[in-house]
Length: 178
Image (cartoon, rainbow, N blue to C red):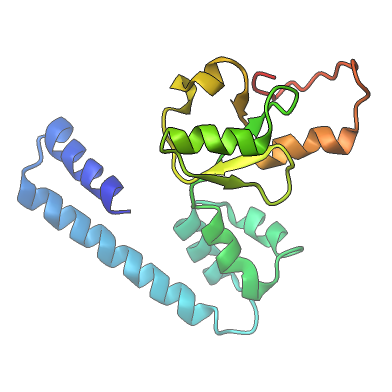
């Protein structure tokens, strides 16, 4: 990610007193190492089986212990492994839960649109909206008044799986507000 690389370069100059040429050399070496690693992984992936060398390279590339990668292979095919591991390096979607007792999802979409915040409905959660980018949603009136809460879609779906009765209390020790 270009922005992150620039931030790292600035930090190297500011906090470690590197000059620009030292930073450029360092990042050039890191980029070359990364490209070599990608090529090695690509070549080894052509082999029929995943061997110890490939596991070591995947561990290094994705910062995931090789025993975890081995376990992943029990439910992710070899053909899908790289896509799956790549997905773990991406930022999670920025998702909110709409308090359907107080406002509809469509009304929430309208309010967000009026505040120049792009959003779309979640694929599975009937009360979820995915925001197109991260931002200070906690400063919004609809957040401050409890009409929405920041909560990932998976966490939203748990309550639907439990099918609680009206007025029933359920303790979710990992939950946000709401």
